Amino acid sequence: MHVNSITDTFKRLNKNMHADQQQWYTLPEQRDLAAQYLLLYEMSLPYGLDLNDQINIDKSGVRIIASMENLSSRQMLDIEQRLHDWMAENLSAYTFNAASPVLMFSHIGQRNIIRMLIGSLAALVLISLILVFAFRSVTLGLICLIPNLIPAGMAFGIWGLACR
Image (cartoon, rainbow, N blue to C red; front, side, top):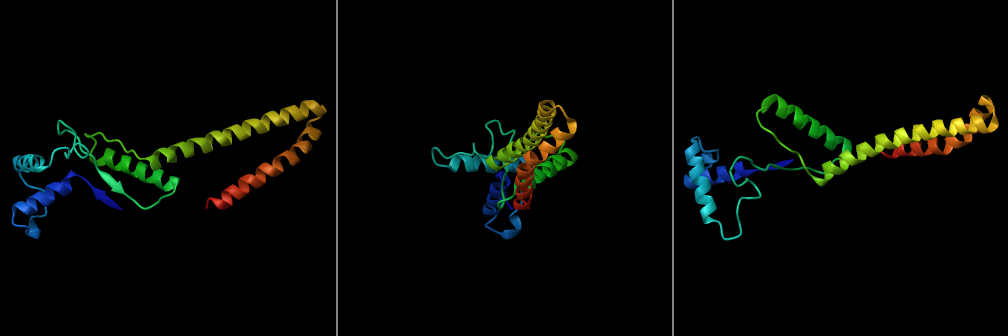
């Protein structure tokens, strides 16, 4: 995992302002010094290049980018939950939003799986009731349900084996 934020820029500026000495690759200790570094950096950027992709206009929020290897949907949702828990425990005064296409599709996939299972169970109950009423026998209706369940059971079994 690699994390990138505006703090990397502050550390680099602090180091540059102290003759590129490695021990100064830290955040500036004084708030006003950090503000001066930020102003100096923004003034030195060419036209069209600014920090709006890392820090908002009123300097009240920053973007932190975490680059990770390819993860499964379950792993991605687990990381998001751990991040929410950590933020609630350690930085409860701040708000944050996690966003990415991978995270979005992880949530969509989880919701689709749950809805599909609920829909499959509802269809099974309706098919059972239709067969019971069609054959006018609970026993015969349930026996006729077995050939209808075998393909679905095989599909769920293959799906379960393939997604391990």
